Image 1 (cartoon, one colour):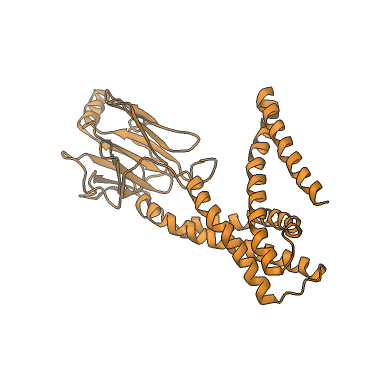
Image 2 (cartoon, rainbow, N blue to C red):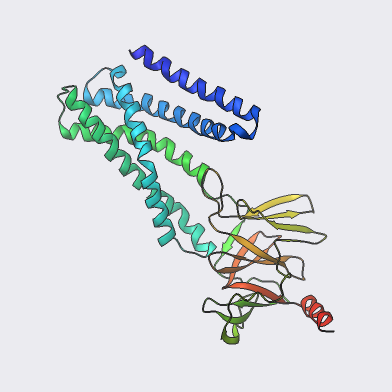
Amino acid sequence: MKRKTGVHICIFIGGLAVLAALALATGPLLALFAFVAIFLIPLSLVTLFTALVEGIPLSVGLRVPYRRTLRILLAANAASFLARPPVDFLNGYLYTTFMPGPLAPYFRAYPLAAVLGALIVFAAILLVEGGIIAVWRKKQNISVGWKRLLLTVFIMNAMTFAVLAPLNYLMVRPTHGVKAFTDDSSWAQHPLAEICYTAPNGDLCAVMTDGSNPRTVSPDTVEGCRPAQGLARNVVSNEYVSISCDQYTHGITIVERDGNRLWRIADNPGLLGVGNRRFGDICLLDNGQEFVFSESKGGIYLVNIAERKVGLIVSGDKFFTLTPRYQQEQGKEDY
């Protein structure tokens, strides 16, 4: 029976690999099956690795042969995987509720939030796998006390978690090319540009690109106002740089034509890299070295392209810039 279990595992992994190859070769009709296969194969390998490693401390702790632990560990790890969705939902709720909205404090807090989230997952794994192994111990009449059992479950999961948790963090953390996120934009280049925007309370306000001279232009609530439509776009460029928004990851891609350097601004945690917030309304300033963008969590930011620096100008939405070029364009329209 033990040899059959290993053969079944190999057949299962091989079958998934064949299914993935067929799906990719036959086009979109089997694309879903390909996705499932590509997802399940790494999962199967991780589960197998976990069971093989955890079997060592479990066999020592419960004083049973190593091979005897493999089947129960495969079942326990499969059960802990099935328990992940509600745990991930809880972590997602905690991230949404307690993580700061502005980019600078958000990225500073992300590593700590990831550690806390991993500890929650670890606690859930201990609960699920510990319960399953405790039931199995009773059915197998293994004479080991509760303290030894709990310590064994903790040690075996700590061994694999110490390897898999850092790898998981490296795979799912947000990726970007920003060198520095700052809490303000006091480093903005001179001459400064004026930004008009809709404040969180709905008023039409103005501020300089370094965050100075904030003022209220109109104290009346502006509903759905987007002045100067077309000046803030999803794609902008000049002879030095091209900037665009990615509709999938909701990130901003900057291509510097001097050396063809490419980097991104994004908040895209997870294996699929789907954006956690939407970026848009890009406006390249007249100095050609900076641009302004907004994002869905209510921030308007300034970017220094050469230094790859991003700083918060003000909390708000629906902005436009009062640059000399804008004033000239408005004068032509009025004429």
